[in-house]
Length: 218
Image 1 (cartoon, rainbow, N blue to C red):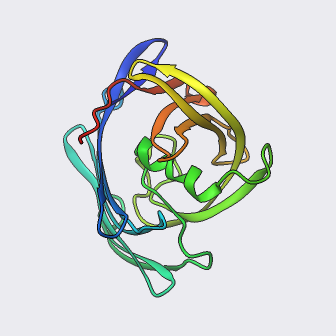
Image 2 (cartoon, rainbow, N blue to C red):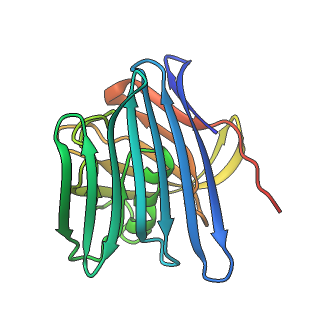
């Protein structure tokens, strides 16, 4: 579980599960997010191919117990396709080309944000390199739009660090994520081998997020 913290107080949480399909190396990634301070929940499921690229995904966002938007994302034939229904836009069907093979799909759970590290890699430390993909929202809380939007995130690999959070001490890789040129870049720490989320600090929203519980099944 990941805790959402502001001034040391828990304002939300994220439960997640990641299952590796041993026959192929593909993964199922699930997350359920609660943001108590804004009355938001987010229910997300990804299927990731053996190369870490999203094959399909689902996201539902609720505000104060009412559905704000629901969307299914499919990647095939060089494009992301989105079928969505939102309060603001009604029923929406989209097809967005993915010239770089759709390396990143940002649906706003923190375990999904960690996938930007997989797409960025560790070359050229300290240099911001673009990661192109699709997101369902460009708002900080991920509660606006809720359809497919092209996005380019500038990501810098900043080296290896040992980080201690409530879930334990981890060998991590540190990244900076520049979601928008106008926003200060938050720092992200993920485990080296799996790119499992460990910690994120974001000055713009005066918040920190950290792994507080981790169970590994044999």
